[in-house]
Length: 311
Ligand code: NDP
Image (tube, rainbow, N blue to C red; front, side, top):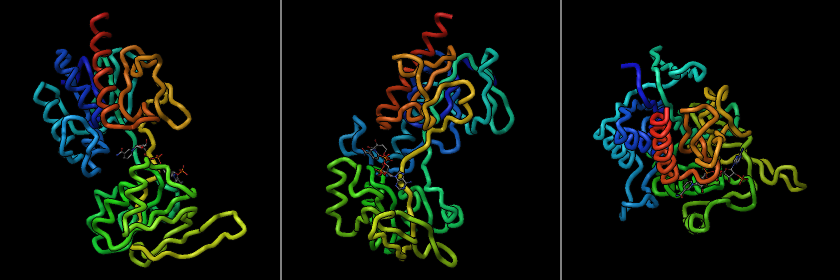
């Protein structure tokens, strides 16, 4: 059926939570999974800060559980990606990558965010040949090898620690003279004997015959003691933040300068288009935590239900 009272775009914690609430409110929601079913958490290791799991739970397992729960309460979870939206006509029209169009009375956009790259041509040249933005997906290939992680936030530290459990040596390339990560994560990283933090370093390029064999680095760029040198490595991991997946909605919905949705009121989920709601990381430049994403998915579904009952 290509008509629904509630269409949910995205399958991270926000999307699945919205699907659970919308199903239980008898909205018979359709959820479109997107290009990475389960979202960003499928690329993490153990999650210790999602309440309800005293011993932690892996990201893929948590997302599979959320998916099952959404399906069990009646959500229609479909594979595919949204390529276009039309919020001018009503019901709203959502086009998928197979060319089909779904008519929706309400839409919840929970499309999450995608890993950022430095923008070096070498990142494209060596993609899949030593360059990765997901340590937990690709770390396995670097057992007993030497790798570098770029970034100084929680993600970079988490990935460096994860890689240190597999690789022989991990360099953490940090552009500032300090880490931005939480205190606990900083301590874990600095005390890991396999991790060497290279503060005030930037990457200028990569080299290698049939894959990454090293990185061209610059230390203290622009200073009197600026130094250029090559660091032999087998793998180069990016962990420098994320870009919100909001591009196809920008024509209709307000975003900030980075592309995060700006909700229209204190609900945090309503937008200037009646019946269109935003939830999760795509609308959250600050916290970006699974529990917050889930909570906003809940709010979006409750608002969708209220909107339909008032209509
Ligand atoms: P952040 O934005 O926190 O950090 C990005 C890091 O990448 C910063 O150190 C930044 O440097 C660096 N960076 C950005 N652009 C470049 C560039 N062009 N060249 C070199 N370095 C660059 O992103 P994270 O993904 O680490 O974290 C996002 C949010 O998720 C945070 O709120 C974090 O706390 C949270 N998080 C929590 C976790 C947990 O609780 N277990 C795990 C992972 C993330 P600079 O500092 O110089 O700007």
